[in-house]
Length: 302
Image 1 (cartoon, rainbow, N blue to C red):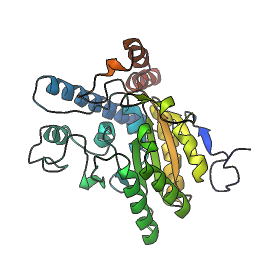
Image 2 (image 1 turned 90 degrees about the vertical axis):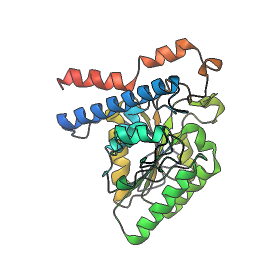
Image 3 (image 1 turned 60 degrees about the vertical axis):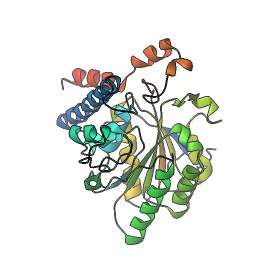
Image 4 (image 1 turned 30 degrees about the vertical axis):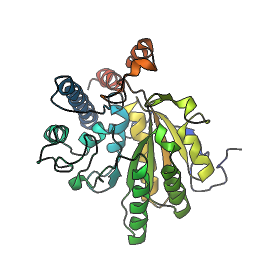
């Protein structure tokens, strides 16, 4: 018997693997999603170039995360729902209205930076016009903030949802467990996304957790966990849409793990050659969500 099968108002099992439903997306929306992914990729690549030129001090890349992030963003009522992101969420930010100019101003610490007026490190996001919280450097703290906002929404009887993202390594932090447990106990309208890129800096997933998936961790806390192929834009969109709709209608929180691969080093200060091979990276590049989305749209004539 599945460990959470006793719950009547959640998934039949605490752990499911989502299918590839496209949720009736129009051709125009699919193209918009792909364009958003491509823009985020080009901005990310430009940031690496600026760092190599000595024009910026630091960069955290999201290359390889684009399909998972854009799929999640398009499942929200953007500008209405709330988002508590983590530092690798450039594509999510772009999907929520963060412009190329916003990004470059933050990279260079300019006064006009909408994130913090140039006072925060790059990738410490914030976007007031999109209901997007200021990101804090200590990992997993955004999960607690998301649970608190969701509690306020429930008390106010709002129909808004909070989405918060995190890396799989940060699910080892106490704040993540506290937030997920609090959300489950109080049946809060919050969706926890775990972007599992298979490395917490240099630590592989099998040394980070004893279970097969971060979604498994939801079982012991009494809420549904779903595992998706994060390189499949439309599968991610379908899974997050279902979780968001359930949370909005009073069905409570959920955890979704998007399994992806971090193609670049952890940050501009990391040398990933010390803990993984070039062959491994090249093999995973062939499964890049950007390439897969382009191929899917070409097959559809989009």
